[in-house]
Image (cartoon, rainbow, N blue to C red; front, side):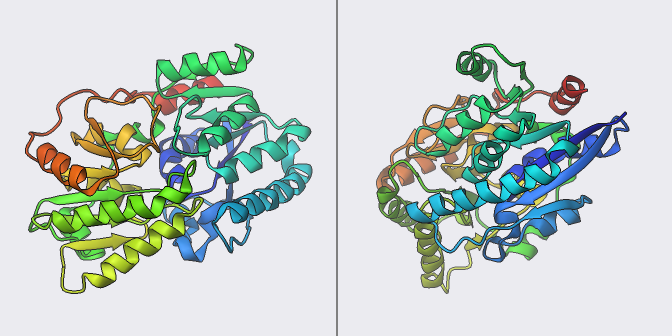
Length: 370
């Protein structure tokens, strides 16, 4: 009998990471695959990225929608409650249809889905367990998901040891590397010309990617942080920029609004592009052609080294994560951002190893779940 697998996907970020696993599960006759789609995938304001799921050849088998009117502290808590209620109803009706449900990462929507499944005895598998982001409340959500899971998969041995301490060795734990890097060499990426035309990117100058999310432990600091970053971008006029808008998170509107207002003030500057959502292939292509990544995204920590890129990691959002030699930490100060950026841009390509790379991660993961 086929093993009935469900995948919880709540955002553009986790779907891109899941893809290597999804592609293998889709063709493996040992599995019956279902997708449970919710979160910002179903938000028009955030690009309605369920369309990307369909474009990649997957069917959203279940859709769970919560309208998010606010992303301040109360709004996030209110949405968490709504997701918990809806998923309680979902698990009651459908929980017995799945032998194993995959949950990835640390978003609050993902935590709500998993917490609601505990009374129903849902068997969860947690991907990217054991990681630490001390500048984000997601750190708490991640560990809650781990504690509710029957199997845990980590991206480094350090995280495997951390999970073992957290769960007191009561569940299987496997280090399979970072799933997003699986089959990376075989991934077909669009050309520089295609990217330039689709996203209005300027490759006549060295391109810098910018991916900056809110720090949710101290959300009151975000307005100052994004002001300093945008001031630095303005002073790095010899470069062009691709600025990716942030995920929906606590007070992410502060960052989104600041970026959009900055772009509007640069009407005559064709070297600054603002992108709502790249999609995995376009994002990786942009990272391939860029000269530097600036921000505080986990992508910089986990993926950039595989594209031989240095990363200027700003602030404390990623504090506590295992970091490779391509990462340089920097305060949210415009003068320091400009100085460190120019220094990193003067270096040759990064030639070190990616500590998150494991060439057989999704294959191993499948073997462990059979």
